Image 1 (tube, rainbow, N blue to C red):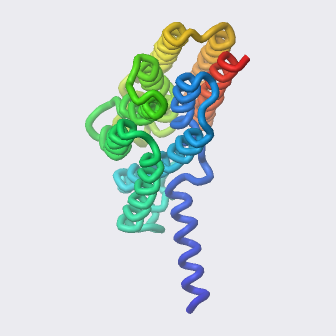
Image 2 (cartoon, rainbow, N blue to C red):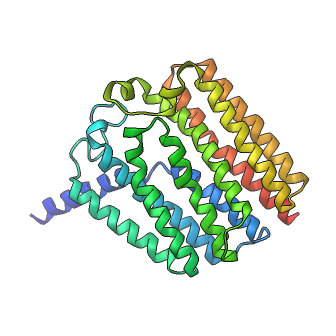
Image 3 (cartoon, helix red, strand yellow):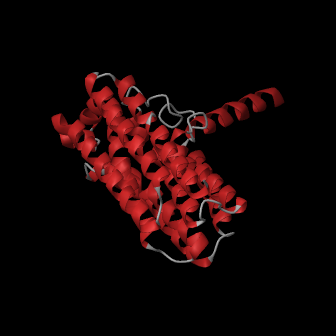
Length: 294
C-alpha cells in the first residue's frame, strides 16, 4: 500500500511540474526581463542582491501561478487542441480542486516575497494578482488577450521601480508600454501555432484578428516597442552602449518576423520565433547593464 501511495504521490508531483511548466521557463524569462530592465536602471546598474532574489523568485512563482489559472480556465479548450490536450487538467491527471490548491500555495509564496518590500509595492502587487488571474478570460471576449498579457508581464517593471524609489515615475511606465507592444509581437507569433484550432473552438487572438496582415502588425508592434525604449534611454540618460544594444535587438526582431513569414504555416517555426524573443530581451538587459557599469 505504501508503494502504491508513493507512486500516486510521484505521479501527482510530475503532473504539478507539468502544470507549472517547470521544464519550460521561457515564460518566466519573458516576465522577468522587463522587471530587470527597470530594476537595473533605477538602481544605477547595481541592484541590491536581496531585491534581485525577490524579483527573480517572484517572477517564477507568478508565472507558475499564471499557468495554473490559465489551465483551469482553458481545460475544456485544451482538450480539443492538439498541442495542449496532454496538459494535466485536460487529460485528467489533476483535478480542478488540486490545481486550485497549487495556485493558492504559489500565490501565498509570491505574496510572502512581496511583504519584504515597501508598502506601496505591496499595494501594487494586488494589481499584479488581478492581471494574472483575469488574463485567461480575455481570450473569450476580445481578440487582444496579448495586450492584457503585456500588462500582466509588464507590471513587474513598475513594482521593481517602486521597490527602490517608492514612487511611480515615467521610466517604468515607458517599460510597461514597451512590454505591451513586445507581448503583442511575440505572443501573436505564439498564437500562430494554434490558429486553426483556436478558430474551431472559438478562442480569440491577435493572430486571428490581423489575418493576412499579421506579420505587418507584429513588425509595427516591434517598432513601437523600440520607440518606447529609445524614449526610455533619453529620459534616463543612457548612452551609446544602450542604444547600440537595442539597435541590434531591433534588427534581430525584424529577422525573427522575416524568418517566420518566409516559412508561414509551420508551427515549429512560429514557436522558434516566439522563443527567440528571450534573446531579444536578454540583449536589451545586457545593454542596460553594460551602459550603466562600463
